[in-house]
Image 1 (cartoon, helix red, strand yellow):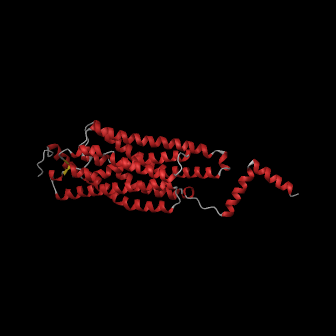
Image 2 (image 1 turned 45 degrees about the vertical axis):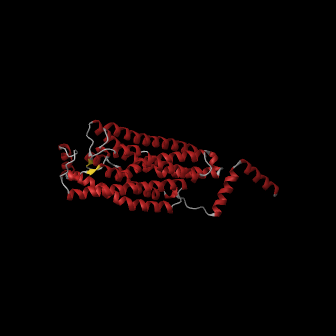
Image 3 (image 1 turned 135 degrees about the vertical axis):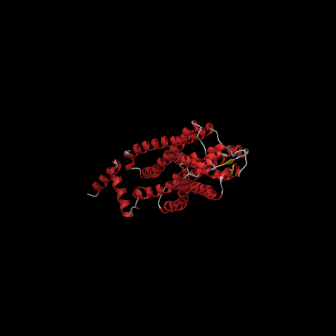
Length: 334
């Protein structure tokens, strides 16, 4: 039997609760979703590679899919260990040293932060593309993607350093077990701020997009029309995943903040509140469904050279100067 100061009557009660069928089911359910997420994410990357999607979205998508796999592998390793340990150990022997939990769980922290920043990056890039604030699209997007990745890595490090200094053990290797209620609230307020910020930015981008698509100038400016259509396709693709991300994190944050106010945060509560495995499972599915559902608008069929020339000719003839030149040519041939 574990004899550390953590092995109190309250901890023994939590351990007994963790062995109930409902909590074991939640653990298995989360592990299975992350297991299936890995091949789904790989196949989603293949689909994006085959489709003619705007390059800036592809670059950000590669980073996003790496974060999906990183979270899945970390969750699978921890979840599998917890499930197997319940078959072998009993009582406080099920507790895991906090420093081991932190180094395995840190990849989940990196990924969770990046999931939020990803939608901010897509919306930001959409505005930058719309107003043409850069010369090299791909270089700018790579810079944004690397910035988000480095920020996701370094942002939780101060908290990790403080956690490492603590002695103790955890039941489910969750942050609920060693962070106080105020810290938890601040973390989830930050997540919700990023979520609603990306949602507001997305709505503004959609409003501007619909307004500009009605601009009659697009009929005569093929370059601008192509750029507007590309941005429209980007918004179509990210919308379902943005809704999925908001649903999962609003649920996660709402449940967690409520229990934090009632001082009910523990390892078992984390299994109920954590909806990120749901996101990592359904996210690649949503990407693939959206690609297939809107294939005609995301990846339009190529225009034949003769048809393309006819479109240019018709567009030119509709312009006043084009009509004047056409009339002059007809008059000169008589």
